[in-house]
Image (cartoon, rainbow, N blue to C red):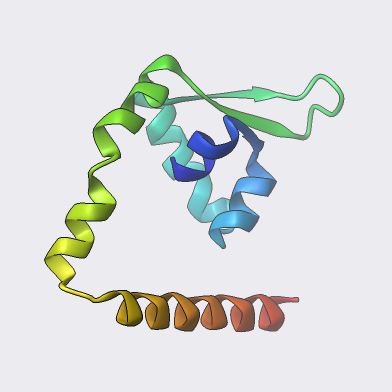
Length: 103
C-alpha cells in the first residue's frame, strides 16, 4: 500500500521490484487486496502482458487510517534515532546484497 500511496499506479513488475517479491508471492496478495476493494488490476492497452495496479477510493482512504502506524511502531519498539538509523542502514545493506545475489 505504501508504494501505491506514493505512486498511485504501478505495474505488477515494478511493484515486485520495489518490494523484493516475486510474482508467485505478490499475485495472491494483490488478488486479496482487489477482493477487499483496495486496488484494481487492469491490463495495459499498450502491452496486454503488463498488468497495472491502481488504488481504489477505499484504498486511498485507508492511508488516513494507517498514518499513525509508523509512530506507534516506533513507540512500541523504544528505539532512539541512532538505533533506528543503524537498523535502516543494515536493512538497506541486506536488501542490496540480496539484489546482487539475484542478479
